[in-house]
Length: 132
Image 1 (tube, helix red, strand yellow):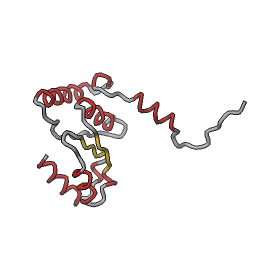
Image 2: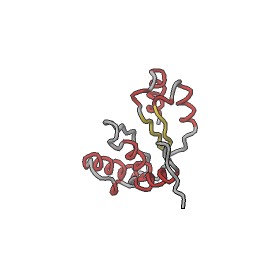
Image 3: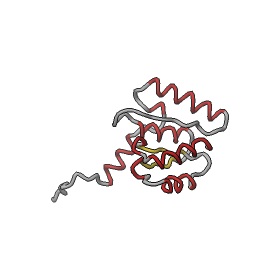
């Protein structure tokens, strides 16, 4: 009987599937941050009742707080498709424009590490946020 030894710190497919299955998908499954949850629930419920998309949301805090998880929960609660990117990945305004032009009505865009956006990309983002 041979045993497969793990020789790398890289995640294996089973690890990724397990991690995704453990993440909360709805606000009621999310533990902690009661004030944040309450505010999001009010905003999400109001948007759904008006049959509109949720207004812009800024999630901030230290690493590991659950910002990405909350963004995915918002998408699930709004029954929206989430498009995820990161500040460092958006090197020039055209990178952001490419993502924005491919968004469908109701899609949610999440920018992780938004504080690392280059200034020219920020300018385009501000303009886009005013229009949508």
